[in-house]
Length: 144
Image 1: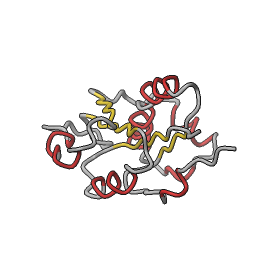
Image 2: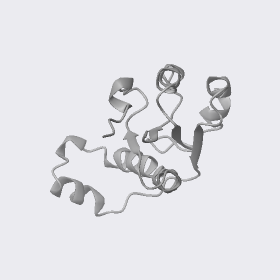
Image 3: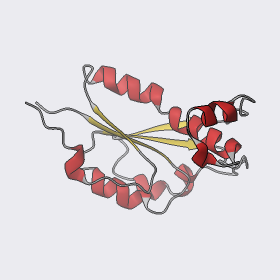
Image 4: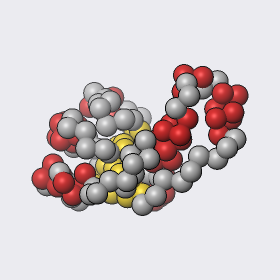
């Protein structure tokens, strides 16, 4: 018995993504890739990197589940204080960008939950930045 592996990350045109996909595709059952129409600094894009770099995804269309975020919401005023209270002092003063990044990353959850249900309630979910590429061996679940 094998456990399905789902890999999710935010995408902002990082050139390492084709390498990530090629390296992980043999052990990943589904990729959930999240792209927003806005950057983490709040700038509106003129086009999606998904479309600009469509050739990077050829051959993997059956494994890729895209989540496109139309608008990143404004940061709630209480969010910075909540992060400091939770010990996230490493965020410094750039709270708006960190909030946008967190919102974009969290946008993958609905699709990941659906894939989890389709897998019978058992899977290995890997969440990281696009340039944080885990060794394939780590994603091969050990089933007893």
